[in-house]
Image (tube, rainbow, N blue to C red):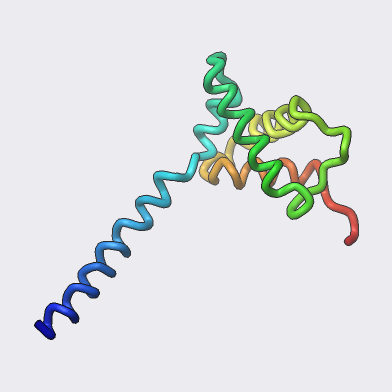
Amino acid sequence: MYKTFIVLPILFSLMVDFAFPRQIQRQLISGESLYEWSSSDEVSLQSQFVGMVVGVHDAFNELMFCTKDGVNQPELVLVVREFLVQNTELTQKSAADLIRQALTEKYRCGKR
């Protein structure tokens, strides 16, 4: 009985250690996918691209970049799309990282 209490937590921790990184990796959207979505003619993929850009903008605005009040969704999408075209070598990064980088370069925050 005592051995069971020792062995079970060890086995559980090993299972979590091996499964967790794969689970995280499955949840990340690649920069390659983002690039494909940005240049696709399919409405569903374009919608995913716009949703991803707006989501990252809403999550990180005024933390990593600072857009002004007049900046609208089409402008954000255009900024990210142009960044992806000019930086195709960066598509190994995650989609969120690329969007953050594009928006940070365009909309730097002033002194705080």
